[in-house]
Amino acid sequence: MPSSTIRSISITVSDDDGAAAPRRARAGRRKVVRSLGQRAVRLLARWWPILLLLPAVALLLFEASRLRAPRSPSPPVSSLGRLDPTTRLVHGVREPCLKFLSPKSIENLVFHGGSGPDALVKRIIYKSDEDDYDSYHPEGNSTYLLQHAEATRFNLFTGFQTLPEREDSFKVNETVNVHCGFYSENGGFKISDEDNRYMRACKVVVSTCAFGGGDDLYQPIGMVNSSVGKVCYVAFWDEVTLSTQEAEGKVTGDNGMIGKWRIIVVKSLPFADQRLNGKIPKMLTHRLFPEARYSIWVDSKYQFRRDPIGVLEALLWRTNSSFAISEHGARSNVYAEGKAIVQKHKATPEEVEVQLTQYRRDGMPDEKRLHGLKALAEASIIVRELTPLTNHFMCAWFNEAVRFTSRDQLSFPYILWRVNMSGINMFPVCTRRDLVNSLGHTRKVKPLAQTNLDSSAT
Image (cartoon, rainbow, N blue to C red):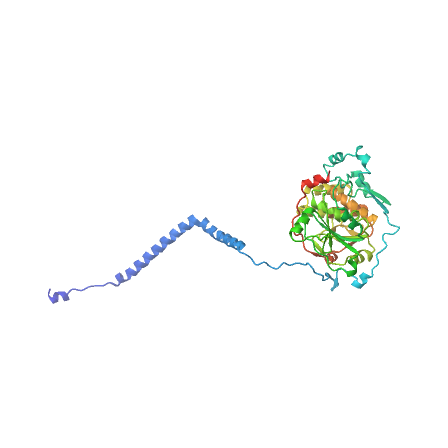
């Protein structure tokens, strides 16, 4: 082809064609993105419940792995062994809750002479099956008595207190005749002759108890040397607690002691309710220690940390009292306490209502103070002189715990109102905290086996 012809051919390139390619590429990308977005929306609409569950499943797996992983134990926070005084703020100045005598002064203390000739109750007679032999049944048949106790917890240990006898038991006379446990030889709560001899020799006793496995035994601290030979420390256990403690290496010596505590093993406990069994050493100290002059009850969740003779001086002798118990820290009224007991599931609504209905029927006032004292007590520590008057008070209190609920804080205000005993020192919560180190309950109490109940009634 001639060169002139070639030179006459021209190629025209348009700017619009050059810009169209990028536009088409961008449009294609937008279309792809739009398609992917629509697909993602459709997938999300279909699977959103599962997507929401995934984080929750992951969190559960994480927490489960934490629970399975071994943790380094943190050191327990315990008040065991503390002797520092508990203090309170008075007019901007911090003072001890309980002012104790010096150890030297405690060593020189002389015991008080006891209740004087003006005591309201001079003699107390305890009802027994021998006294009631003819009044209940001419043959004295214990089976007959048990058949008439089906609706209550009265049994051959307590005797079968009638409502008229209950009413008479609140009357304060020079001589009172009341039910007060140990009603029959077949009633249970059996203690060996050796232990009974030991208990008869006690003049001042600090006691506690743990039935059904119960709590650990904490050694008392803070006593003056001269008090060691004057005070008996006695812990009441059943065979379940004995075996539980032995399994943990706490074995009684040949003299029946673990540290300062004399271990008294009780057989044939009379009640299925272990809490009610615990009321026997708590309230009937005078029946267990007939020669003792003073007693201090300490709940098993506590470590007693003060000198017993010093406690008698501070709470009884110094205040001219024969009975000392702590005020309740949270409530002041028996009816409010009943509601709290039900709310905390410490008793059924039905049994609390039966008790409070009886109290209303008897005319008990709905008041925070009775006879000048706070109506409600916290009964984990009880310090008392063992006189006919205080013994009468405790017998009446025990019978109420048997007849109604075993929550003794509910029956204490009623007994306080009915008996109107003089010489009561209700000390503040701060003082109670100074007397003990609180360790709390360590294990759940095992219920009493039916075979034990059957053996106590035969």
